[in-house]
Length: 168
Length: 93
Image 1: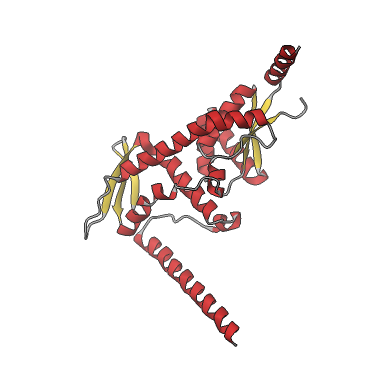
Image 2 (image 1 turned 45 degrees about the horizontal axis):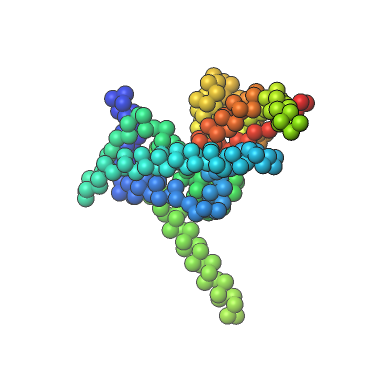
């Protein structure tokens, strides 16, 4: 996948592989969270470390609905932009994000990352260890895919080993 | 008398400087945090980077100090960018 500025008015996502398209289309879905979850707490943190009841009440009443509207609006923009990403068999995908949508994309991507990190309880060390790829090539993604399959194999082996030990 | 008490509290709140504090967060990218500081506070890239590094290394940074109402607005804007920010009374006041 290649991401670059296009004619000073958009960001072009091109040479999109099918798997990348799927991951991109997952962004709005990943923003979803349950009320009362750790993800909700992360998206709507307290504005104060102290127990300032008046501030907390006002915040819940006036600020949170605005923040919620902002987050939903960013998610919708991303969803709409992704609507023009059509994958055809044997072809790589392409779509444009108008520059004025860039901040909403950053917001939605951040929501997705925060929600996933909260849902899957990633530690700071785990998140810090990850080094983003310098390029977004198919090879880099396949490496992630291989590691993903390896992790599943490890887990199956772990489960099999544990049940073997129990039967001994 | 209760009216006087309310008025006094309001004056005190207005007079006391408040800090806007940004807390460390392993998810938000350093470049993103710097960009948000520039956008929200109008800081130069150098100043925004200094605050970002303070957050990263020390766990928090006081990014702005001033009137409570404005501080609340900044915290709201920072939350809108999904940064962890809080409002606290400035020490020594």
